[in-house]
Image (cartoon, rainbow over all chains, first blue to last red; front, side, top):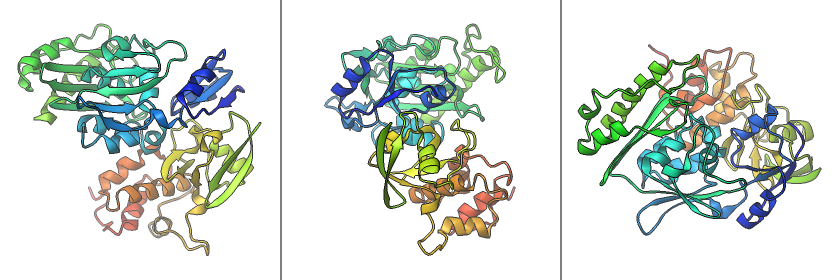
Length: 263
Length: 161
């Protein structure tokens, strides 16, 4: 690792001030950033740890019944504390990485990084979540902007994510066994006003909504409704683990499994 | 350089660190607690797993500065003060849950976390929980047997098919 100054603010205001320094970088749970720093892929002047800020941690329910999760909340806490309110989201959080990764990694870090194979982006997009930062609110539909790209400005911090709770939902993941990241995973949710289906691990553009499946499932939430539906291989990731055609095939399989698990 | 203080295995400790000092380097280099191993140094293998505030953490993927004021337990803090092995350690010995021993500190710490969360896990739950801990000797079966035995369950059915 290159040398850097380490800042550990205890309030959001202090964190904002520290991040205003030139080449300062926020550190969430560090489960992606620390390995990147070791590989010298990043060279921040100051690393601003967000792990000591109580005001951006925790799980609660707001007046509209939405599940609200602080940006600095770990996957382990979401798996435990959201289970009674949004089981599909808690189940997703409890299957990220391994137990030690879940003790440190946070929802804010995962969303801000927007890895094309991460688990939280499809949950946010598939739930139509609202992402709250220190300065504004961003709809999940406007948040993800391609691989490792988001609508966040330099130094902007995710303070909270609000999830409307669906009638039924499920996250189905086909894990790449070495990395434990999804090779392809699908978050499918049935809301009163329609279905949402979000896909991770597949597209070269990162997480996306499979609108053809959403239309079919909105009128008929059943496995049969998506039985004949095929995702396009065009624009899918091809690498040593899977071809674009195989990933497109898995989108259909994971979607059907997700719907079946809710019935 | 900055000063960091934390509680390690019940003792208040402190030392000088750089911003980039990892928790595992503070434990091994500054405190001399070399039971925590560094295997891959990329958070894949789990040999460096310790408990921070009772939660499993890979000590190679956390900065020492972030442990300020926190409670850390390493493999050295697992056995009793008189050297009596913990139930998990005893089971690893009884069921031959190790060969070269390099991954064992992380395995014992992970298995201890599992049994605190889930005192009677199924074989599948044991295997799933340990997926972030790699062992290149045992083929895992005896590790799983040891964890099942430590939880007071029958080991006869482990890896039976």
